[in-house]
Length: 252
Length: 128
Length: 175
Image 1 (cartoon, rainbow over the protein chains, first blue to last red):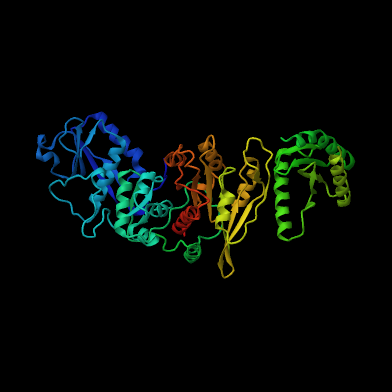
Image 2 (cartoon, rainbow over the protein chains, first blue to last red; image 1 turned 60 degrees about the vertical axis):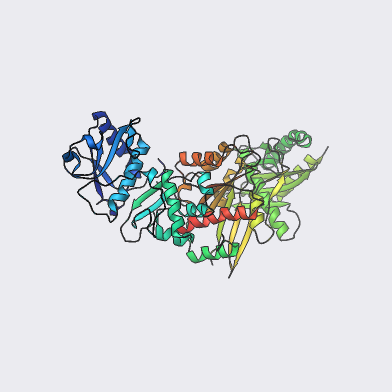
């Protein structure tokens, strides 16, 4: 749809397994379709497995109704429940919805691929909607390898929430940026950057990819688009001079 | 279109035909308003008069800006000398309207003849 | 020394000439002539181009170009926009169908927009609030374009500077 981004070589090793149990065949087919369509929005290569160890267990019954063995070898559990069950606020609701499903997997990617080691007992699932709490003690909501780009221009209300949001969004409109680069380019404190990123994720307009420690190069132009300018990329110094001349440098 | 321009259209058509008749069938004339609408045209080479009218109005406007910048008054004529022909553009004031006229010729036509014909066209349009 | 240019485009009356006048260090070049189009409620209209200059010193400058707005001058749009650092599309929300007007310019530049630093500025939203900025964003998103869009008043220098700042931010990330 909006971004036809290709998986970078650095993400090829990040394969995650999803095992559905106590879900109907139709629901499993739906999950397959969601993964196929949502591939460009997810940072990792997800595959559906029907038995054996997995990273995420999609559980179609309340956990207490399942045998321990059924979920013992899963790193995380993603509950699926009927809408009126009211048992788990972070569960996916039947019938499965694409956006909620992709958002939940995006949040799980962050959880699974940060420094937290796999444990024998399942860890709580954090869906996108519940991941908006402010970071504590300098920690941020996304891992250090995360790179961010807008899927679309944010809603006006979100931009109005803070005077720096337009600036941050402007930098994120061109290519994926890490937190360090975003803060440096925009001259905005990382805490504010993180808060904005969390808000963008909650609005489902944040595209997150993981990169290795190498410098993440700018994405090539989409499709066969040719830039207006045949010049080489503009020097940072010149851009700074333009900003200074226009009085944009250090604007609040 | 203003009353002045409306009354100008028929005279413009006759005048354009006269210039092509004098220069030859290989020529073409497009008469347009300063904001790029063609009023009349003649000659088979004026294949897309609407496009030519818009282009000539831009050309004339940029010429006027350059004349003003150089403090040399208002432009009377602009020439595009190309490898296979020539465009001569004349800027006129007719009945209070700014008019731009383009004459397209091949290189065998003397520039002086082209200017002469455009001057005659301007006189024709200005007649009541 | 290399100069750079920023191009302002958009329908007639959207404020291209005003925006350039707001930013230019010197009196801008304007090629306005009397309008004879009864469908356009303006006394004058740009038929060539607008030109302004921001002097950076050391012999360098940023050139500001404005295109003529009317579609019959479309041949000028791409000519003027060649080698531009960025493109500012100004729109007038008081037009009968502002989103369709935007579409004209998105179509005209469609082969270059995905790789061009670009921002859309929507004027006269105080006169008419619909379509909303989010509606514009939907149109851009629907075309697969990640282009910032903001409400602006081109008579306000800060608003015009915001548009330029967005273009510079995009240029910086592509650098």
